[in-house]
Image (cartoon, rainbow, N blue to C red):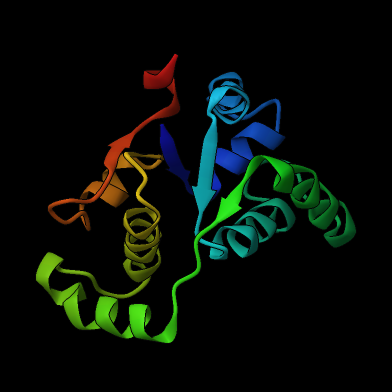
Length: 143
């Protein structure tokens, strides 16, 4: 089954003290096809270097940690046409402000044909989900 993930999954998989660490590691290791919107790398870098998680990585550490995850992921690009269409439709699900990034993760996941979208922030993604989007799940539900 093809699944998509957001940065919360990657950050938790990388940091042993994070809630859901074991479930996120298991999800990445046990899923046969994990995809993400490439923006996930910049979000993960921001989280790792920003210090919100009780630990602040140096930029070179963060980039190396992300590089180490790359073999487990495939990426689904959104073209300018994809982005334009998504932005035109965003109002239909009430997307405003920074919620656009969660919405675009779902747009990319749907484009990739993912059946499930895993996140530790289900509420944020449920707020911008459309009919036909992948099921939004927490990694604990995959165990």
